[in-house]
Image (cartoon, rainbow, N blue to C red; front, side, top):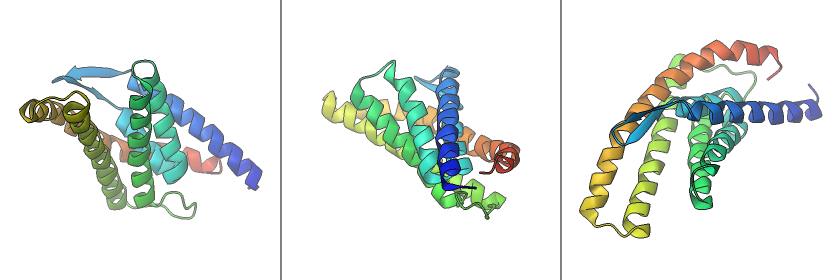
Length: 180
């Protein structure tokens, strides 16, 4: 495949995956002061299918576009960076950017675990910084807020790291036939 075609494919795949992530983010269920959704699974899937950069861009753009409707510019940027990082780490560890390489089940699972928990760590760090330094809450209140957000974050992470490899195995053959 020519370089120009590959670049076009990357742009199209990034846009389509960003749109999927954007749409899936709307499908959420309230849970202990947070929300459960499959958006993180789609972010991990983007990293697995398209590698660290293209997958990271799709995850960051799709999630940031969703946040654009509800939050300020700083939150949108934080979301872009944290979702990009999740997909980047997952895609980098999986090694799926190499067209001649197909990762095994353990490598996929490991990549998804590290990618999902990268996001949980960044989300909890953001929560701490905002609660303590932006809003000026007392340490006890910050700890309580973080503890209330942690269960849903962990359940989202576990759901994502289970679902993403399954989705990957289902979708990868079709993506490969398209020349990616």
